[in-house]
Image (cartoon, rainbow, N blue to C red):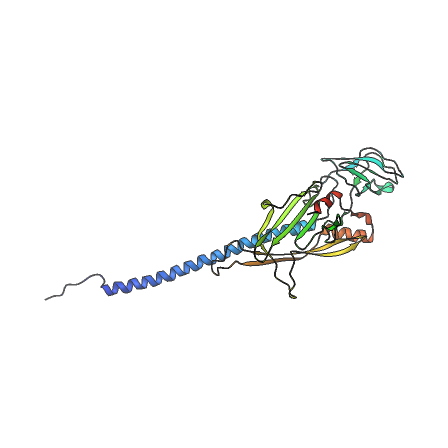
Length: 320
């Protein structure tokens, strides 16, 4: 009697095959899960790195530009509207500017004319394109006028006082002003770094014209970085500030010739692998405000009139 030939798998073979398939599938799924978690970690850190890099690049650019003075729009020719005579008391003058109107302020040093008649004159009073000043030399109509030098306090020194109280830059607030954007418009910019050990804060950038009457309060539209944390302590155990300053004496005041910026930020979401927030500390230790440094050297060695004084309107914006 012949045995019938059987086709297919036995129950045991089927169970072994399913077990192998299950093990292989588990390994594949585990690898895919790990890949997704790694990708999540990388995306998390990439987003944080990109945000911090953008903020620090802007800080570096604007600190370098701080202190630049502009009499009118970039490339405009500024001239006397009509002739002025030599005087022993302040006389009125007016300026003409191509493109946009010139803008002066009390205390500003303006350089009039060229050649032997050239002189630096300090504005006694005025606003817009007209003011008063005392002239040693006569100057004809259409004589060129320029504002040379830079604001020595373009990075507002920490020891600055307003109304009897301190209103200068601090460890958490950086105050700068000048033609920050290089477009001929002088603005005041304030960076504020917030955050405590328990609650992440933000880095705010608040910009306004230097002639604005009041400073707007920080709001969510001004946030450059969120999830800002206090910086780690240094090797001596001292807290590292967001902003630190190298201060030099200049005349009867001071100027800031270097700024150190240190920011610590955590990721928006927890790391998929460690279930902890990832942290990054970015430090710019020697950011030089080139306009302030240049006028510091010039005013110290050659011409003190190149160190332009702070406009009175800026003083109002320094107040909290």
